[in-house]
Length: 243
Ligand SMILES: NC(=O)c1ccc[n+]([C@@H]2O[C@H](COP(=O)([O-])OP(=O)(O)OC[C@H]3O[C@@H](n4cnc5c(N)ncnc54)[C@H](OP(=O)(O)O)[C@@H]3O)[C@@H](O)[C@H]2O)c1
Image 1 (cartoon, protein in one colour):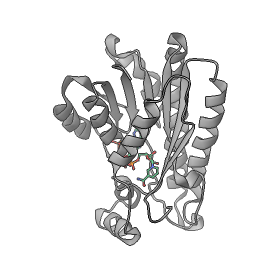
Image 2 (cartoon, protein in one colour):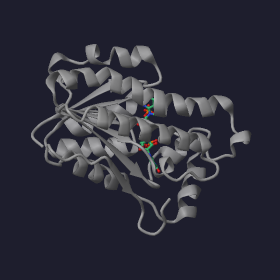
Image 3 (spheres, protein in one colour):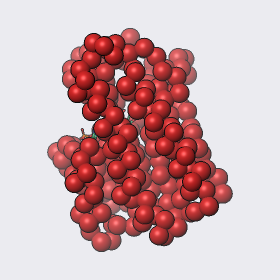
Image 4 (spheres, helix red, strand yellow):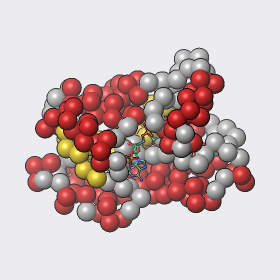
């Protein structure tokens, strides 16, 4: 992989943050996007001028549709799009016990947000006939368990979208890969429960998890394949339990 420009949604935390750090270390330029400007600002200070932080709310058409025009001209030729922004806010409850707005918000971000970002960035890739789209799915998109009806649905949608788009683009220079992690220790559980101590307990109860760096490494593997190879799906789980 020579120097590239990668745009990562959800770069302010967890997997997106770790991947930003890793890509910059490898000499690439990264557009890190999210809603929490303060968290992106800290990352900007750490990573320097190869990192460009941009406010982005993938739930909002206006935010995503103006993304390219909000970038400086020399940052617009995006080679890699990492559709990573996602959450399970209000989740890990039986469906009937959850809040309808929470359930719909999960779909808004994880599915509609991913579609919005792809729709904004793909035309430029097609015009240049080169690019790589990495979508963050989940093991929940393959093996649903109780209390994840909506989150699993969102990741099944990511699976269908990724596979269909990969096939559709097979005769172009654009590749599509889906990374499907099991449990990763990130800000994900805190966001879900709105409570750090509940999140800590959730991870402790599992007893084993991936670190965000493990997932970043899997993404680097997918990105580093020769032109004629595409990693369609890469499932990465903690060694002891397939969660
Ligand atoms: N952690 C796991 O166990 C696990 C397992 C499988 C798959 N995944 C997937 O991995 C991806 C990254 O999650 P993570 O574990 O790294 O969680 P995380 O630490 O909570 O990070 C999630 C990121 O998404 C961003 N985000 C959320 N809603 C957004 C919105 N509407 N617009 C823009 N950005 C938004 C957050 O930034 P702001 O809040 O600043 O906007 C944050 O940077 C997600 O798609 C998740 O579903 C996670």
